[in-house]
Image (cartoon, rainbow over all chains, first blue to last red):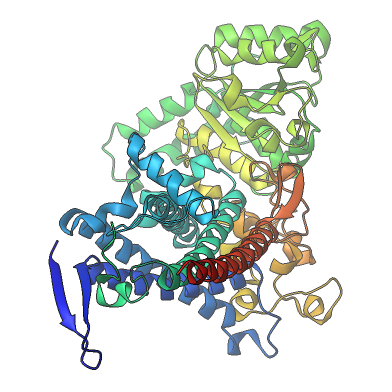
Length: 239
Length: 361
């Protein structure tokens, strides 16, 4: 990682402000984040309307293709999401250490769980000062792994399995993902778990946005702007 | 039991002369481009090849499979039963009864070891050592295992034999168990449906007797030729689905216009069967054509998957009855409330801490 320490004299203040910024999120990670945000929103919306369709449209069937378009957008967005997920996994291998963080939880590390507990205590107002982390804090890493990384893979796998139903038994989708129907032989159940997966991700999105805004205001480091510039800015020099 | 009848015997019985038979053999051999010896070989094969013996047993079931089977139009069930297979045992429709009937089982098992087809309608309850289904004085499960030992293959008729069906519905007090969970060492063809379509049943039998092998099966053990597409894929109302035109409630304008029954809980999009192509009663109609959604009777667990009229499946977990969207929205609501409360506490804390700091300095 590169550390730029800049002792910048504020142009109008005159008083020297000490600032430390670290390059955390590399471009591919940032692009993935924002592409994902758009895709997840699209997929959740279209997916919801596939499960609970809009009111019937008037006219002849041959003049309308509403459900077809909704499903097309859903499938297209799903395939793009899958491609970006593959690229993101690739980047976890070749990118910096922070690119790997959401793909694992150091389950056997006692220190991790101690710091995890500290974060939980901070969020429940039991502990005062949260620790500073260059990347995600242990609680964030844990939540992202559990509620983003795993569900995304789950949604891609079940999504392709469901898509293979229409694509046919000779399709590559069925060859690759047909095993899902060995777990849920009735695809009605596969639909149900695919729905639940959406809600897991949506609940995460709510918490994620709230915590990102809150931390940006409360903590001593930048959060939101970091996902745009990639730089983590620390606002003071205490540990 | 009668001496084994060959296909030649059947042909003769149907009034075809020996002369016509040999003409048929030489013509077929010539048209297929075989050498001069082929006609004789073909005739010999037909003269010696015995009809495939079939044993049809009934476990815990309602006989709807048999009812469906006897209505097959293509091929006619009489041709299947009287000409194509040798239906040696079927306790529902056979003339023999009692010990006489049961003796046939033993005879077939010995005489056609590894050659007969065991067709099972219904399943075996395993609880209380199988006492919930007694057949010929013994638990059905014992009879099933005994006859399965020497069978070439097993056909599991219907949703009962394939998946368990209503007698296996939660909490399944008799522990009704599908055939593939009881017999583990034999090839099993699942022909699900409640009942399966008559032509699908006779089609499977015809395939086995004609080619002497089992049809290609899918991942769930169903014949690919009938179960590789969903009702939805070949539904004649599919155009209305893609257009976004749905029956919103029974007897509304959409119902009269024949719109898609998706919102009325049609299980066509998740059901693998041939109803929308083969149809029922000799191709007359099928449920969706008569205005009612598919109930998914050929799918595993259809009896436990909630209402036939819900699009989204009800989840019966933790004693709550709600579909995935209701569960999700509730979770989102709780989390939303928690976020609001957390934000309020955060703001309050911030203000008080600042005041403390201000007081201290």
